[in-house]
Length: 427
Image (cartoon, rainbow, N blue to C red; front, side, top):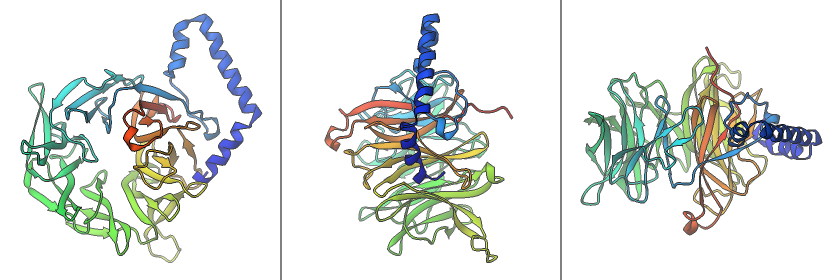
């Protein structure tokens, strides 16, 4: 089922009398259990019981408040259940913990371990970096003279210690490779070059002389590391539009990935286990009156004998005026899933309109799209995934729609929702 089918299916569900009966019976059973034990009722109310996988028609959204503290742009560490973030009020960098069983933040304010001061949010916060040398945290930091620089915090003798990176001045928004088998972490970042534009540069984290500039990245808003290889994907202006590119770090070569219409925005490339670990990628594509997500695969699309990157699947809204932002991917039980924010405004900074969080698989035949935050007049922002013992949860910031000037007072907290995909299966 494509995205265009999902809203109509939901409308049918709303008027499906059998569905209403099932919901009522489910609610009544839970209410009866209250008389047996208050503890069981409480667990049900908190939605902490492990769930089985849902068929798409059976999924019922259920948002759970994680914390009302103002934690923005948090980044999860999946091997060690935790997250890092920058407090935008005072610039302090923190690590918070995650309860692997329930998905709760410990403590709720996210301030379990202090890391550093003078962090600054310029569109991206603190990020994890992994290598065989151990974990570190990278971020943008204010220098004493007010100029910004790349910075890194390491765990030294049990204490997180932060410092500026050599040759990190006037570089912002670092993003690290996260392969723990890498001997050294590599990072990419934005390097401003004047006239309100920037290019992508990259380096091995602790070796400033290794810095390289990525060609054709002038005007790029950011890039992404390709899982399992030393390569970067990004989108950038090209001949009056915006296209996707692949840069190989070791050979310093670049490949244009897309040639079709539409302005390519966010991009991810990964190995899809359901396609024998073949590399595929997706981009959000901004059209004249809506957005779509196109998933590309190398294949002989026109049966002419030429294997090239071609559209494998398109996810599109059911009507014009829906735009997609903040997409990401995760792999669960051998399958790839995408999730993103769907808004009724083409401007991702338009805080006056509601926005929902959607989930999809990549199968073009047995397809489904699931609205995880259905039926609420709220603005759901910046989704992130964390896999608990119950299965993947999507976390996000939730707001009341309103003008940008009222954003902080309209903030309701960080919420999470169960994707309905079930726990990790034993191999």
